[in-house]
Image 1 (cartoon, helix red, strand yellow):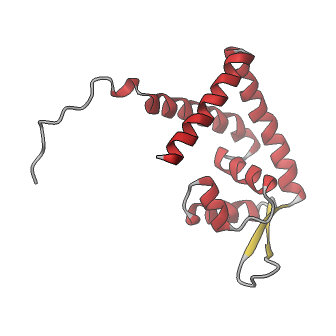
Image 2 (cartoon, one colour):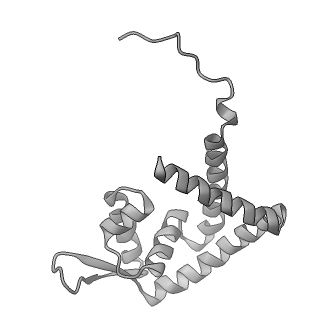
Length: 151
């Protein structure tokens, strides 16, 4: 195996938009985990709960595609949340081997508490950026997502 030393790595690699997006994502995820930890919930679990709340009846496979994670990762989180009584599986009305995911009352309560933490983080970002820049950022991020999906 030979190494191709002729192809340079761009000197501005860490100045790229994709790297800035990743740094921002890391910072936001770290803050979410830090702030949610006292409630006994991880940021990934919040994401799963809010997804099931928004789209009740999703299957594990649908949820994995929506969250862009493996079905095994979803199954692991679903099992944890189910053990805590925050999520329940119900039989699909037409497909007997498929189970749908639904929040329990405890899951909704936990989601409300966690969402309040996420709102505080969002408000801090909006406060720092200002309303106009925060709206611009949201629009730009939506555009980035659209461009990447089209590529």
